[in-house]
Amino acid sequence: MPISVTLIVQMVTFAVLIVFVKRYLWGPLTAVMERRQKRIADGLAAADQGRKALDDAQRQQDEILAVARERAAEILDHAERRSREIIEEARERARAEGEHAMALARAEAEAEMTRLRERLRADVARLALAGAERIVEREIDRRLHDRLLEEVAGQL
Image (tube, rainbow, N blue to C red; front, side, top):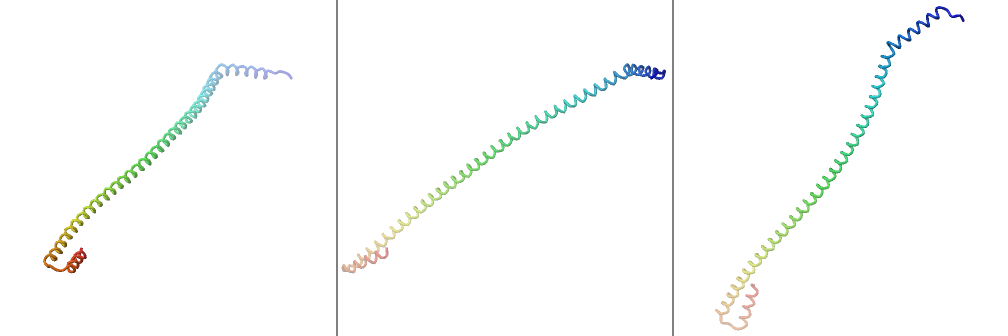
């Protein structure tokens, strides 16, 4: 195959093109590609860092929720204990008030009983006195005397 002038011109043109590209285009193209590669690497690093930050935030959120749940459980336990205490205090107050009312009722009943006994004594004394007056007024025999005493006793 014969080498022609066209082929030589093409080779020289190609060599000039290579020199031109290497001198004027290759440096800026590699710089652009390196910058792009760095931006992509930085973006991937930022994505990894964001994923780690998201995982950390999720972990913190889980911890905060766990603490909040524990606190809520403590508050509920405290509220239940306090309600039981309040109920027990109310029961104790009601029992004490009931005992107090019973004591007052007993005292009132005893006072009424004492008053009735005194009244009964007064009535018995009055009836005995009336019976004695009848007996004394009538000087009568023993049978009449016994009958009058039985009458007075029946009235008691």
